[in-house]
Amino acid sequence: MPDKKLSARYPTDLPAWQKLKAHYREMKKQRIADLFASDEKRAEKFTLQAGDLTLDYSKNILSATTRKLLIGLAKQAKVSKAIEAMFDGDHINVTEDRAALHVALRSKLSDQVGHKTPGIRAVWHVLNDMDEYVTAVNDGDIKGHSGKYLTNIVNIGIG
Image (cartoon, rainbow, N blue to C red; front, side, top):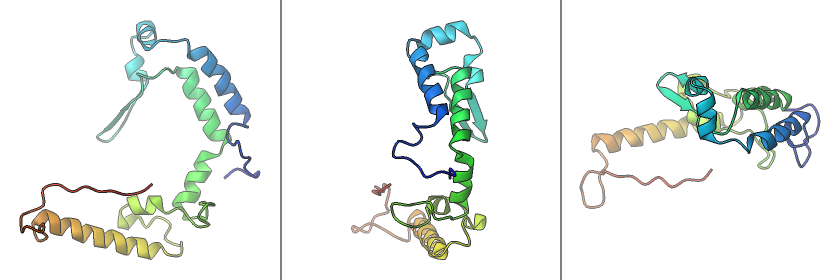
């Protein structure tokens, strides 16, 4: 987290935000078609691969300068430190006065994200219970009220 107390406007009060805002005023005049026409390697330059996941952000109004400014904002806002604090299970959820355990809920049990955080073992137990339930549904051990296999599940959650 930043060394200073966060303002109500944070991160819009950071100098990097102001640079990005000025750049936005220039970029909002651009058209996607023109950006592609002026750079035949645009799709390649603005696509990332991570395993089977492809992120193609070339069809957004942005440039190499935009990317540079966004990275600068992330550095100035100390996003990497905030991410590290979240993965360590630090007390970063100030509204609920606790650690944010989202990453623990989405990790593999072997990752043991935030393993020193009070209450994290309860998360692992819930994940185990969920895994057992999903397996039972998939194996047909749990059926609907009519006795038929479940084919569709609606998951309604928060957050």
